[in-house]
Image (cartoon, rainbow, N blue to C red; front, top):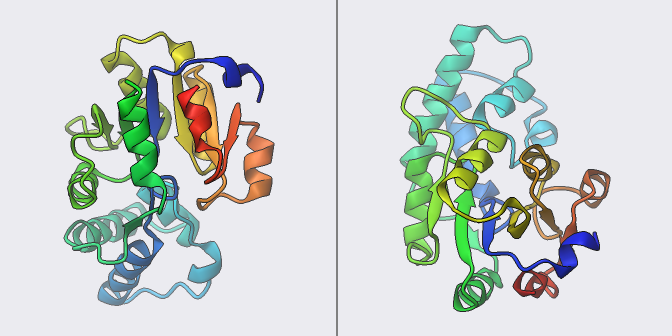
Length: 220
């Protein structure tokens, strides 16, 4: 983790759920409504569900071996339920406003790289008053007819900004965020306050480990 400690980052890529905001309440509600509407049962939902994986990945986790047609039906229904939510239970972490404001004041460029689609992402950025804080937002549906993975989204972000990769860092709360950074050969920071377990994050070997008290390492 020492290599990144001495680097000045010109661009900080933030995951959204579990990194900048708590979102599980509204996601779980949308899943419950989806299952009720389609008449599906998932007895192990509480033990299997996680915030972080893409919608496609989470559907496979909850319903392994399901037919392609049924999977597409579930995804369609979830998108409808979640994308039309007012997101009453999704709230920023207490230190998120200060963190973003400090980074912007220091001249850093900021972007969101998330598995959440464009509609909900834009809604939440507006709800939190963060529209002017970010210089870019990258979601799976930014390219018509395609669903991009987190590594592909990070790649899109790198192409948009004229900044050397070693001066760009990905900040997230799950091993998937760290892996997306690794695939694009940029430093990665893991936050301890999100949905990834401490053991998972340790095994992912991020360059920086951030707590609510140490996020200012990003300002170095």
